[in-house]
Length: 198
Length: 327
Image (cartoon, rainbow over all chains, first blue to last red; front, top):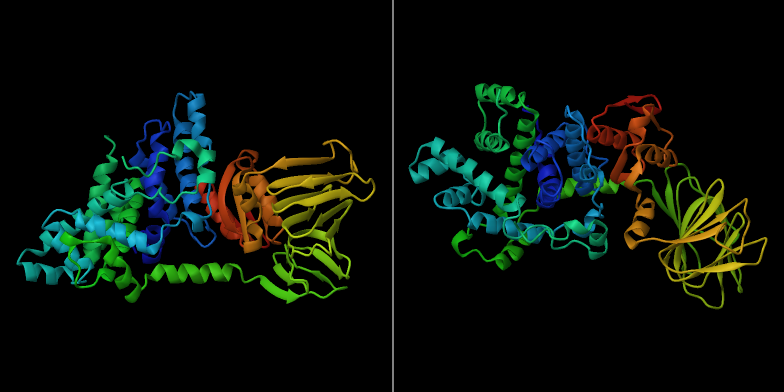
């Protein structure tokens, strides 16, 4: 197997990915040393993939933030010249964990966003992706139907995945902040701007 | 060597995910494996894009009539409900139900005493309609008369959801403290040196059995009554503090078989787990023990907790007989 089980991929998609947009907002306001937000996000996913078990994680959102925080903290600690400024210590502050039930976007809402993300794909990527995911045709059958090489279909699938991930994970239209509970927003006030897209 | 950009990694990861979507040949599989063995960000990027790919499978719910150029969000709902449900929801649900398997339910009659084992949480229904949720290793006795509802917390911690009955005050005795309510919801924890009362709804009156001084405690407030200091008239022994609503929810996570942390040290979290399980969490390194942690965890799974936390702190969890070592 290559590194990641289907089960873990499903878990990440369902319970972790929905919080990525707000993690990115949070990270973008903190000193990350030489890392950029994408580096931290990738390292955080890597840590979540090699976890032996996820059954104990009941609140994936705060766990994701905690893992991301540790990625940044490790990096800052390893730098040769250590100048811990007040602002760098900010990174050690944890975002308010919220009961996942309150911030979990409904199935219907997630599906709506997925529909928007697919609708926003350029052609012919969109047609190909719809045939693959909605009609559930194999890549080879799509190539036959559209009379194009299979490698072209594959290229469009890959492009669609990147675009959909940007749309949903980087706060394209409709990010995931809208259903935050107000009483916890105050605790972590600089996160309240999330969800407006950027 | 120039460090690979995260963006480049993401694009390569997406190409691999598109290949995985049609199925990998053995040669491709080993090429992917060796690519993944490089920079640790590659595994993260690949796992992330596979996760997104899995999420997009849900688009099958749109059905064959789906036309993206005229996609209207509102159309998605009925079709989605009618068609297949997403797999992970079911298995995650099953896991969370398994997580609260330690739960029980029983009727508790007047004059009866009941206790919970370590790791057990039990709900007790009283004849008056009140419900007592008994936390791990706790003992409670109940005596209902026409004039009063007397509850004694002899050990541990309990949440009291009191049925409204102005004719019969509901009085909980715990150590030196007496907590009286008419209809409300509050927890009492009998600790080694003090009794802690936390009010979730309504108002309770807290007083010490020895002195007669009392204090009214409204919702989202906590009072601590010290055994030693008795019941002083000022705040030195019976201190009341206000808590944000989110903290009150967090303090009550145990009733759902969970433990919630928000910036507590790993040491404090390990001590908290010790209340619920005989499997001890051992941390010898003081720096590690002082790390702050956050998250919601199953109270009856100290090993899973230790593994998750070790992972996030860049440490290791070693499971041995009756204990788990974080190092």
